[in-house]
Length: 497
Image 1 (tube, rainbow, N blue to C red):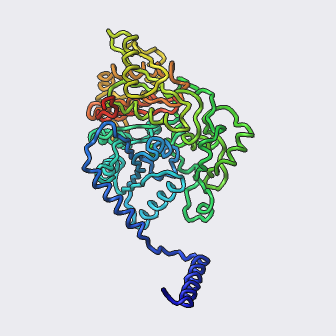
Image 2 (image 1 turned 30 degrees about the vertical axis):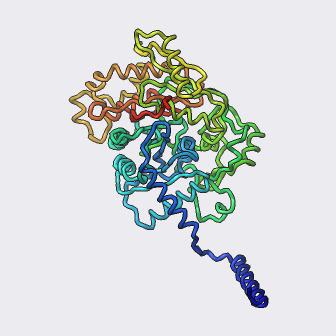
Image 3 (image 1 turned 180 degrees about the vertical axis):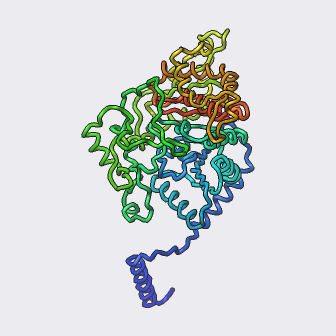
């Protein structure tokens, strides 16, 4: 078809140019028709998805998780990814009070996306600035996503430092929860006793570091670690005491920072030499701002939701019917390989005149129709009992510095959190219920790998932010990892075809 000398010369030139480019490796983007096709396919699918009616059986949790910089809250990112992994939308939200320049915004976005990709987390990152936390959360819920690809769950880290925060920060957190519920978005709050915010404890992620590009740098997980049988958490139980934790800083962040790297511990047991050796082989260690490796206890705290969990239970306290989300999320966790050894145990409330055996059988039948396997169903009949004197004293010590008489509260500094005596008296029945729930939690769930409970709905205008945070503190203080969930009353479970 053509002259063979011309063909040989052409091939020689093509291979010459190919090897020149391969050797020099110029940093250029040649463009690709594949890129255009991926965009067109994604756009077409998103438009078609908007025309499909919603159905309970196709419900997926699409989560907006408020992480700030994702690399500073890796355990919160990991927990959210457990619920969304390969199945649904996950967006890491970041709210900044100050206006950011275009250069700073671009760098922050690029760094966060780079870390998520290096951390093997398929998620998006969304940033808003020049807004308060509550307004930023509202803006992200309204603007994030396209069509039906929008968050339907807001995941927050627990504000452990509320007792040392000013009233504005408490109210902002309180309003953010209300904003999500008013927008018909479910809310989940995660608390671990070691804290979720590691800013100032681990070194910031440097995406320009050549070492972090070619090898696993700080915060980059080796996937073999997740499947490591030696990476399981210690079986030593949590220590529950009646004292009030006052070792909090004045830092106004939504998630608690651990006090010192050498003070963080998931268990009191020393890690064996063989375990330390295995950890070094299976993952790269996080480092502190000075470049030193953090202790194994801190590493375990950071990686706790990527490690294989010990054999135990996920205790689900299904107190109210919120559409079934409080049951669906722990069920999703049990489908993950790292949580395969954790069995579901369901706690439910019985009416005054309802027999416990009948309630237990009806709950088992309902869960079996939902195709959710549970190891046990426990019926709680005595929630209306008066809490013990010790628990009352514990709660009084928790709220003592916030309680003010009605006439004194108006004279207080408006920036100081206050609980009025009249409000405390009016909400006394609810407060007693939460005290009683704490006693039941201490009785049944201190050995659980995770506790999931229905989140109390904050009544804006009736309940103040400090009292609401006191209720949450009563439920979660000195407990295993705790997830509070409140659905939007949209059914997410069904046994109808």
